[in-house]
Image (cartoon, rainbow, N blue to C red; front, side, top):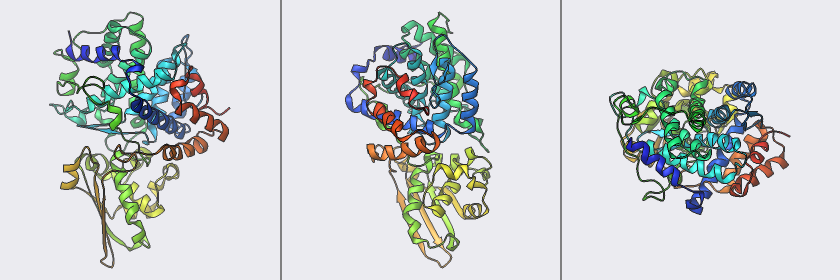
Length: 460
């Protein structure tokens, strides 16, 4: 018996909605609401349009409705569309451990699986989301990538794949044996490589975990009909651990000696790579000291190693050519925050990353690994910022916990203030419909038919 698989699926089989503490349920609703908002914000993006059009071509006898359009499609394609939309803006949440993930990616397959059930409801989505966080964040807390292949060889979607297969099997009602096969089918055949997030970044950066979710849901559908997968899929000689890097054990699960992982996830206040959140806040703190950006001689950001490698590691981060590269560029997001006093979705839509004055300011920004920031990571995303002017004045600050970190939670009002512009301006949802959608999301455990929520994400 594969002990890793057995431990994980046994926990999943045993977990019930009633086992989840109320504070965890409330936190889950925060992340589900945030994920739906991010999906609406991305609903008119090129990848979303492509994904929606592809899904619309497919019909199913057990359809799932898709975020943003409420069009029916197959459950696996619904998981892909939902996931791609949630992730594309790089605005949904983050969890940090040995590596980094965006666990509300799992809201996509949770909604798709619940929508495929005749009686799929809000409790199903909350349960599936909490379970998805347990698996994905638990894997993120292990040194699974620190083997011979190294982190850069595998994409984070290789972890999301595991979580999506477990949570979709749970929501769809698979028994223990079927769930084991669903996970085995998924992880034996659908690993993604690290090149997805390297150099000039493409549309697929925002779609890769959505695709992993699609595969997870598809494999759950196969297993429900009797398809079997290979044994010892994690611990075997040719298994997942030997392919990925390290054999690991998941940390204690929530209600089994550990804290529910969802309680240590972080909401993003800005639409950019996670490592930049506290850096942008630092820029905004110092901005009032600068009358004109032309006065700036140099800017130094001291960050942690993963921040440097992901968002300031090569020349592409100073010369981004795509929206996806720009949201993973520390120089770009810092320059925009200095110039405009904020970072918003529109800065990418209007291709600020190609403007000469933005590029000129970016050229003055240096990103280095700082000892203090390195020692604080991963619990504290500390960024230390220094700005020197042409006249010799120097200003410096440091930001540890950005707004939305679990040590500095967003209020319900702040979360709604993030949600509303995405739904109104990009999702084109009328105000009265938006208010109804928010009410459903805040009271998700009382929603008896999850399609009621999904339908409210489409303009009526």
